Image (cartoon, rainbow, N blue to C red; front, side, top):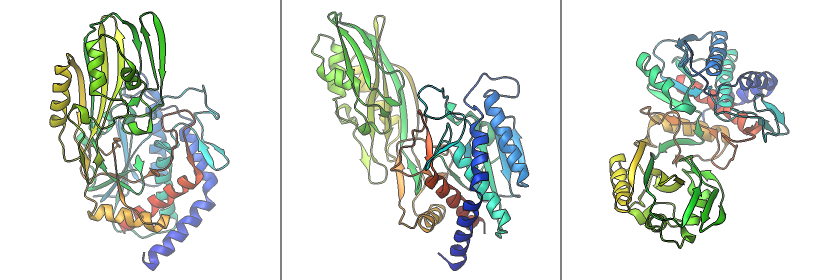
Length: 432
């Protein structure tokens, strides 16, 4: 870190500490908008709340003197000038929330001790506010920059990223893009992803009821079964399907215990042993030195009338292709008597760790955090998964559990301060 970088770092820390009440007020304003996907209407493709959140972002961008464009309420962009070299991509929509179970109102940013609670505080409203205040700090501290940047806020990340598909038809991304939609230090490697459902006519009458999870990307914590007139409930531990080792799969627990006559259930029990997370038994089990081991989880198993329906979540390494993984798993299922019902997926995303962009972000991380930073790989999909050269830079640390998408979603004040300082220093360094 140069002397100039050190002095700027100290000035920014002081600035954010002095303005924290104002920053938190802005966070409360945007969190108060319920921007989960709503009924589309004319000029509001993702509903009233998403459009209202984008209007809030546009107002903030104009107040900063940025050139603001609204892309038909799919997304907005805010540029400091022509030909920006850096893009910062964030989203203002959220998953739904109800008051049930929350210790604080979901549609507010409530500070309780050292924690800020509210829907979107970590994904992605908190980081979005941090980006806007990073720009304001750089402006008010008169930090010289010779290159331009662009902030892009989308309104549909949680429902399939139609916002960015539309945006890209009308405006190109800058050559370097980061999103605060993942993990620090720098998330430069995202595994390929595959979701599939499959089914077969059920072939046994010993099981008369079978109900489990219907969300493919979640490890099921319950599996209710009626066998020979006896009702049984298998319980486990929920987790995101990209990290099945963090959970205890109730579906595979039931299959391991099953001793009945269904050839389909017996086949699934052999193909997906309880406690196996990489799909090795069905011919998968791949790993590489960059993205690590793949994951394969049987997450859905339900008896619907005379039909057994199932779902699988797979995250695979960057040295494999979607077609290869699909071919292996589909063949194994067909051999067991199942047919494919639905399939979605995407190839892996990777930006080399030695690229100048990644190296610069790692330097910022190390200077601000005061510790060595290494690129990380994950099975989750971030907002830049389909953006060439894009990486995730925050907003959380790998060891945190911020209840993202869950009850009492939150960000600690410490992590929020790191967001502010990371983004301000990154913009200044890349655009100087």
